[in-house]
Amino acid sequence: MKKRILFIDRDGTLIEEPADEQIDSFEKLKFVKGMFRNLAFIREKLDFDFVMVSNQDGLGTDAFPEDTFWPVHNFILQTLAGEGITFDEILIDPHFPEDNAPTRKPNTGLVEKYIQDTEHYDIENSFVIGDRETDRTFAQNIGCKSLILSDENMSWEKISEILFAGERIAEVKRTTKETDIHIKVNLDGTGKCDISTGLGFFDHMLEQIGKHGMIDLTIHTKGDLEVDEHHTIEDTAIALGECILNALGSKRGIERYGYSLPMDDCLCSVALDFGGRPWLVWDAEFKREKIGEMPTEMFLHFFKSLSDAAKMNLNIKAEGQNEHHKIEGIFKALARSLKMAVKRDIYHYELPSTKGML
Ligand SMILES: [Mg+2]
Image 1 (cartoon, rainbow, N blue to C red):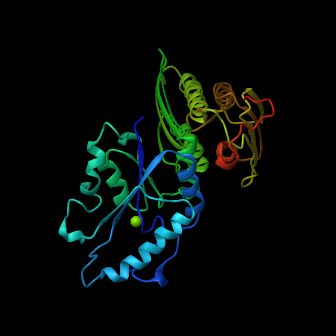
Image 2: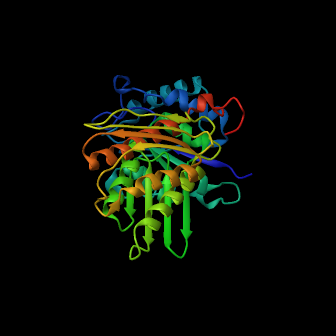
Image 3: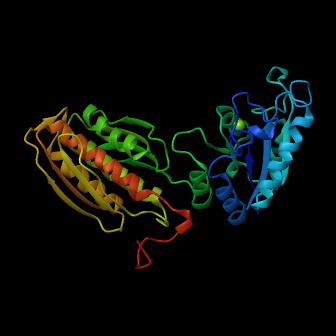
C-alpha cells in the first residue's frame, strides 16, 4: 500500500513563532498548545510518514549563525521524541526569501523526490500541516491537501480529528423537471457560504445555517420560480438533508444531540437528534403570508423535508412578535444545534447509542 505523508512545518506549527520569526535562543522556545497530545496520537494510531519541512531564513549567515539554531532545534526534536513523535525526514531550507530558491517553501524542491515517487507515495491524500498561507500554497504546489492552524476553527484537536476520523464533506446533485440543485457541505468548515436559490430571503436563512453552524455551505438551486417557490424550497431542503446525512458518515464519536437557547425578543428553540428516526415537531405560528418572497407556509415544509432527508428528529418551537426575527431565530437555533450535534470526540470514538446503530 502506498504511504501517505504529513509534511509538517516547524515554526508556528510545532513551536510558537516569535515576533522576529527566528528561534535562536531557548528563551524564545514555546511549544504550540495541544500539539504534543494530538501529534503523538496521530503518530501512534495512523500510518503517515512524518516529514518536517522548515524555512530558516539565512541560516548559517551572520543574521542567523548555526550555533544559535542547532541546540534549540535538537532540544525540540528530543522533546518530541520523548512523546513518541519522531520524523522520517527533516528538511530545512536556509535561503532568504529574495534568493528565490527552488527549495524554499512554497517551492517544492526539497520534497520533489516524494512527489515523483508515485509508486510508493499517495501524494493526493497526503497533507501539509502549517500555520501560514504559504503552507497552503506549498500544499497546492505539491498536489496534496492542507490543514492550516491559522484558519478559523482549526486547532491541533481538529487536525487529529480530521486525520483520524476523516473529512466530513459531501456533495449532492439533484435534477428533476422542476429543479436543478447542487449542494456541498463541509461539517468541519468555517462557515463559508456560497448560496443562490433565486429567493433572497431564503438565501439569507440558509446562510444562517452555514455561518452559525460553522459549516461550509454551497447551495445552488435553479427552480421553476415562474410557477411558484414551492419546489425550490422543498427540493433544496431534501438535497441539503441528504447532504448532511452523507457527510455525517458513520456518526461515530458524534455528540448526536443538539439544543439551543433563546435569541433576542423571540424564544426560538430547535432541539435535534441524529438518531436516524425522522420526526418533526413544529410549534411556530406566522401571521404574515410572506416574508421577502418566501411564503411562510413553506417554513414547516422546509423543516419537514430536511428532517426526513437527514433522518433527524427536529423539535422546533418559536414565540415572539416580529416575524422576520422569529424565522431567523429558528434558522440560527438550528445552526447552533447542528454545530453541537455533529461535534466529534476521537478519544471517545464510539457510536452514541446503546443499540449499536444509528
Ligand atoms: Mg510556520
